[in-house]
Image 1: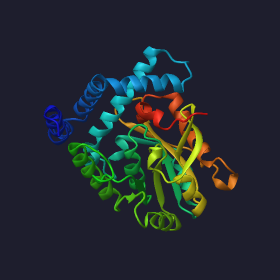
Image 2: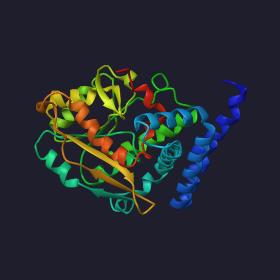
Image 3: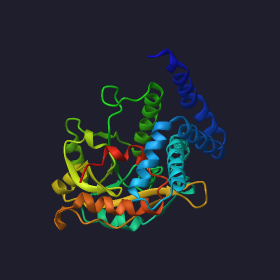
Image 4: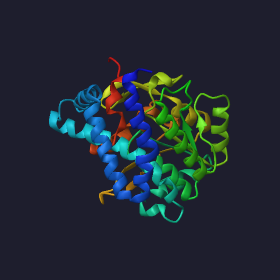
Amino acid sequence: MSVALLPIRAAMWLDYVVIMPVAAACSWRLALWWGRRRGDLMFWWRAVGRRAAIDNVRRAFGGAITYADAHQVVRASFRTQTCEEVETFFFRALTRVDYERYVRIEGRQHLEAAVAQGRGAIVFSYHYGSMCLAMIALAHLGFQVNVLARSIAGSENPLAPAVRYYARRKVAQLERIMGRPFIVAGEQGAMLKIRRALRDGEIVYVLLSVPPELARRRAHVRFLGQPAQVPAGTELIATLTGAPLVPFVVRPSPRGIGHVLEIRPEVPGPAAGAGTTQRCLDVIERWVWEQPGPLFMWEFAQSFWVEE
């Protein structure tokens, strides 16, 4: 490791191990204030990423957004990511009794109707807002939640040491709340676990905005306004199991502190014909066009896009 990186690595350890946990223990408002400051620091420090994200926002909107507005969207995106990390240290307080003070749920009936069909349900979203809170909220509502996730092992995921330490603690807390381990995509037996969960009437939680280079199967779609390739695993699961596809998003609450988990009606699956992945993306993107700031993917959107 370069000597020049030592102060940065030390600052990351201090932040993840001391500052964020202490701030969250003192006050949620203090922790979120620090989360926003972290986002501003990242926005300032990641100059190359900031410029790429602004260019991607303007390209996605087809020039119908000013540079100043794109600048604000990207700053909000960076803040969303850093606040989502801070919120990990609230998870212990989000008990079955208290979580509704922080997460308001809209559209629960859509998921209940899907599960009532007897084939479980695939709930899906993007890396948008505080998406991990959906796992907690759905578990506390009584649903059996199985998360399909990427491995955080060093050989599979090039995270900084402090980030990997934080990620392991985060996953462990979520697994404790849901009462089951994550299903790691690509591991032997993963599809068998998914099919068994859906057969038993449980929920499988997936995010569509996984980097396409990690996928074995890809779908050609329009993603964030551009021709793109995205993983087609969700469509494959729906094809093999007949499980209904139910979109959700976790967006910031208008109150300033807290979030809204919004669940929308089932999306027509493979039985409705070709284009299942595109239909799923279209539903989620309606939220993005309304409120683009909470989307994580602006900096890396170009990795999904392809030539016409």
